[in-house]
Length: 120
Image 1 (spheres, helix red, strand yellow):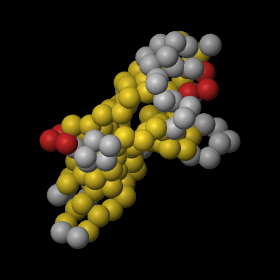
Image 2 (tube, rainbow, N blue to C red; image 1 turned 180 degrees about the vertical axis):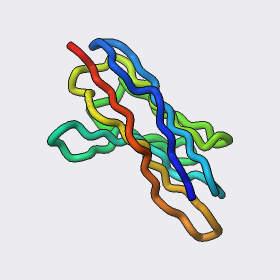
Image 3 (tube, rainbow, N blue to C red; image 1 turned 90 degrees about the vertical axis):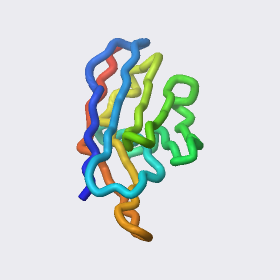
Image 4 (cartoon, rainbow, N blue to C red; image 1 turned 120 degrees about the vertical axis):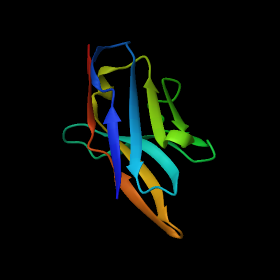
C-alpha cells in the first residue's frame, strides 16, 4: 500500500509564508501527477496546484503568483511553497497523488490533511 504523509501546516499572520511537504511511501513504481487541494469549513474541496511527473504545473487562479508547487521525483515528494498568505487561504490542505503501484496499475491516494490558519 501507499501512504502520503504531509507536514508544514500551522498558524501564520497575513503576508507570511509556509511550506508544505508531502512524502509518498510504500510500494511505488512511479509517482504521476501530484498535487494539493484545500477545504475550508462549509466549502467544497478545491484544487490548489498540481504538478505532473514532467514538471508541468497547474494553479488555481486565486494562488497564482503566490504559491509554487515543486517535486522531488527521487523522493516521491511534493512541496507547496505558500507566500503572501491571506486569511482566505485558511483551510485544511490535502496532498493527492496518482501512484503506479504495479505495471499498468495506478491508484489515487490522499494524505490525512494539514491545517493552515492565516490570521489577519
